[in-house]
Amino acid sequence: MRGWVVDDDVEPELDPSGLRPLAKVVSAGPPAEVVELCRWGAWRYAGPLALLLRSASPPNVVSPSAAVELQTAVFPPLVPPAGIDALVRQQRGLLAWPPATDRQEAVEALLGEEGSTIVVAPESRQVRALVDGLRRSGRDVIVVRGNEPDAARTASWARARAGASVIVGGRVAVLAPVPDLTAVVALDEGDEALKEERAPTWNARELALERARRARARCTLVSPAPTIDAEAAAGPPVRPPRAVERDGWPRLEVVDLRDEPPGRGLFSDALTAALHATLERGARAVCVVNRKGRAHLLVCGACGRIAQCEMCDAAVVEADAGFVCTRCGTERPRVCLHCHSTRFSARRPGVARLRDEMTALLPRATVADVDASTGMLPRADVLVGTEAVLHRIDAGPDRADLVAFLEFDQELLAARYRAAEQALWLLVRAARAVGGRRGGGRMVVQTRSPDHEVVEAAHAADPTIVADAERARRRVLGFPPFGGLAELGGASGAVDLACTSLRAVPDVRVLGPVAVGSASRALVQAPSAEALSDAFAAVDLTPARERGRLRVEVDPLRV
Image (cartoon, rainbow, N blue to C red; front, side, top):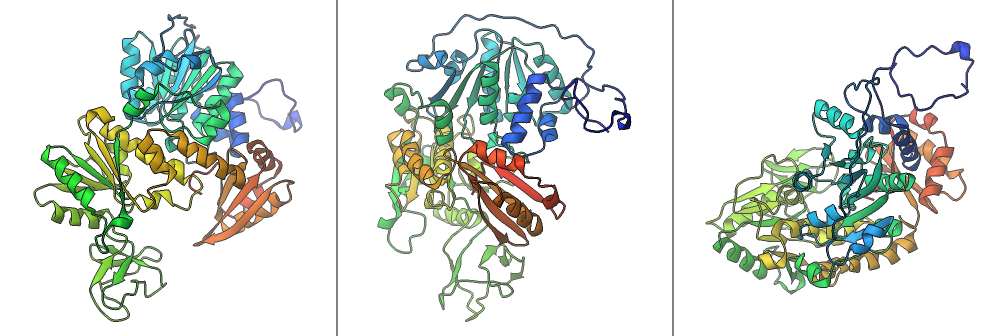
């Protein structure tokens, strides 16, 4: 059986005569300080230590006997951009940097003058641009990403052990085996890509802060829309001069759908005019609505009833061949069960239906739809898609001059406690796609809540408006960072027994479980993140897992 040596000179729990000797040492593994960080991460996120150690280890064998020659390098300090020089002198800091403003100069100023620096960047495109700039400045840059081939990841892991380098990569970069850490920079600290989807669901932002604290290194969080969690950990954000901040956000036009005539749908006069103006300039436009397929709520044109499934009564959605139930999978032709009419109106059209309607609205333009399953970005004048289109388009050759959110209330009023932060991040991605206000890019937001703090923040180029509103709500509800929160999910028997065990822990509140299809879900709250982690550490969940699958997600993003 293979494993990790995580400690030495320990007293065995069993009779030493019953222990087998160590067969051989196969490969070098994470250094002691990274092993301890993984231990902390397993406690903080209530998950198996081995899975974190796997993320911190090289995929292939690295000779454990090969001597590592430590490198040294000292770089002259750089003059930071105006307004952020105080961050260089802080052990922990938070920088609110505009989304459409180049941050290369700011990142270079935040690097350690000696030793190694870890730069966590969640998106591959950002990593490529950042690496090129750092190498031009004379730094030894090592790229560490979880999606690289095993051979490349192993070579990067081995090189990092020599020190005097800049480690750039996704969330796994925070576990790099550097021996001389002096600074950590976490870019886009609120990006959901920094959160591991598999248990333990660790967040690279939190591990970066903890690793920097243990190494007495400087840690700076950088974000165009700082989260409440980042403010709680690193203090109020430092912001560049107001002129720089405003220029880093595009112009925003807000369309109040309440003023549109009935039956107009999602194509307002303002949106139609903006699309025509963009296409006349030979530029590209992107329309975003977070619903796949053709339509998610269909109303009979004759009797006014919602189209439902004849098997389970759930609302059916529109597919190319007819209607389909998303709950049980039953398919049927486009016929009303009550009056047998075949005329239906779409109240919640998906991207495929909107693509067809957009094609009719703009007959001379090419229109394509994009969702998470789309491979290459289509070469079309207008892209209609879910938020996945914002992950694929950037300010390079694929850039757009216009990004329009057709129904933004779906994001603003979502039944999630992080809905405001997540909606603001959609606007951040759109801002990066169209560029700053001096470049001519613009965003259009259609909503029935034009006074919402997310819309006001983007309009005023001031993301702290959202943070101020969120802070009060989270404190009242006891949600992170003002309390610990975890979600249990899995087999009903496993979740039920886990909830029973956790209810016996003082100061822990369990909400649920509730049935979700054939599975169950429950929420666990505690006065703080530390109290929540201690509660899971004090409870043995093995009997619960023997009853079926059990997943524990600490600090869930989509609750």
